[in-house]
Image (tube, rainbow, N blue to C red; front, top):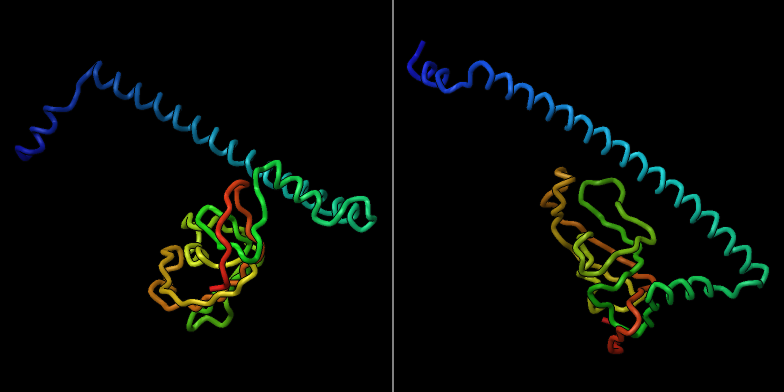
Length: 189
């Protein structure tokens, strides 16, 4: 045996101390297993709530559309009421978009070498939050404006596109802001 091996063996706990360590490790493993089980159960519950909420949203949308068609509810009245309760208002087309606003956008991203563009339709984006690569490009623009710009792909979740030039076309839809926050009017940029 080498001196190094002998030294490390002499530092190892013996007898009762070793049994105590093994017992504590066993208890820790049981606790970890319990936490993993709880985490999985929580995850499953969250997924069920999300699925249920989508179902409720769909039913609510159908009900609202039906009431609007019958003339019982004025178009947009329920959304306006809900926005007011949430402390939100819809920005006018002449108001500039600012960090913190929520803009609904439809975008296409053309990546060289890809057969089809990637994109989303009517995606809510919190401007300036950094959750999507182009959210800061919306600052200073107007609702219902279309913008185009190019950038280098930086999302490490798609290594096959990393560093490639991406051409974005972004159609800005409605934009909501907190009530009481009034931006200045501006012309389209």
